[in-house]
Image (cartoon, rainbow, N blue to C red):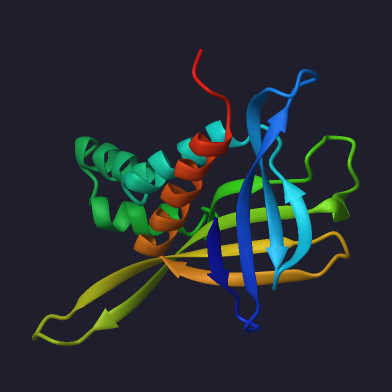
Length: 179
């Protein structure tokens, strides 16, 4: 179970729960959301694969698109920094890493939602004579419950990695047994 302290001081618990077939055998997991100990929602029917994919994407570079644009610019004889700066203006600012909605496609949207967005913040550091840009990546975890209430927690890169790793380990413990 992963615990996140939200901006309003409440505690959001994300807990994997086994999804059972007609015979009572676990075949996948879903996530139960608890807010301050009370049931808040249930999201992500069959979400084990999506959690594993999110963790793998988090371990990769911040933006493979950036490296592609810079590589193209260098090969075409353009300045990679200027090309990236120009192209970056047209890209979405925050990248959604994971979005899990209510358990079934026909559930109403107020039945629960969990979204994780990656946000890159840049700030200028004047330490040495030339200065440099410092890039900090944070994760914004937003959850919406059955009653339409939403909460938000902000984590650093390592904190999000720890949350996803914990959830995957618990999914393996409560989910289907290997054949």
